[in-house]
Length: 216
Image 1: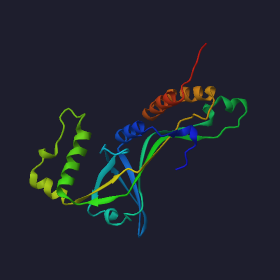
Image 2 (image 1 turned 45 degrees about the vertical axis):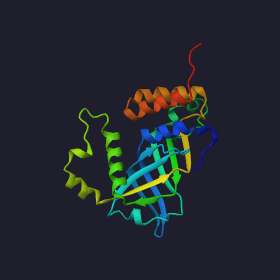
Image 3 (image 1 turned 90 degrees about the vertical axis):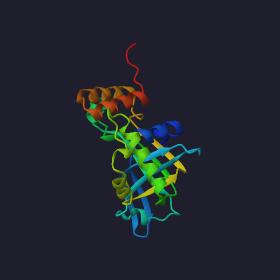
Image 4 (image 1 turned 135 degrees about the vertical axis):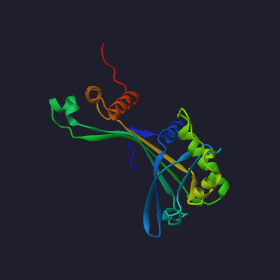
């Protein structure tokens, strides 16, 4: 993707943390029928390599697992916080009017050679890992073993695993770094006034990436 230097994030630990924080991804591949996308939760694992690996699964009825070219890199897109930014929030709007709307966002692209996996042990280990991660905060976590074994076996036959070792990671945090401090102050004030979950998240992100120094 296009990443101006001012928005680039290439610290691997930061990118890894993002993959774990926003695990629902868009998996995009190229196959005989062209581009194909599936929107699925992924599990990031540190496997001893520099960048780690991604694991997921799709329904056996989903043609994605049969309809990709293994020699062509797959792309997994992970999107985090995003928010519309109005030009009315800028001081520049009142002074010169030379402003336009934009959208702030954070996103990570992961690339690798995808492979389909039908091995039973791999699938069960993946399902346990995926479940344990997302049930961890529940007061009464559900475990794969809580369901009848024959039921789980039947359900597992209906899915196919997908994985790739990450060969490239790209991170882009576009959060008003290109605006001068007074405009960023206006952005923070407007986001604070909106007081929605997404505006609060973007406010904290802008603050963390481009601190505003107010006062004397």
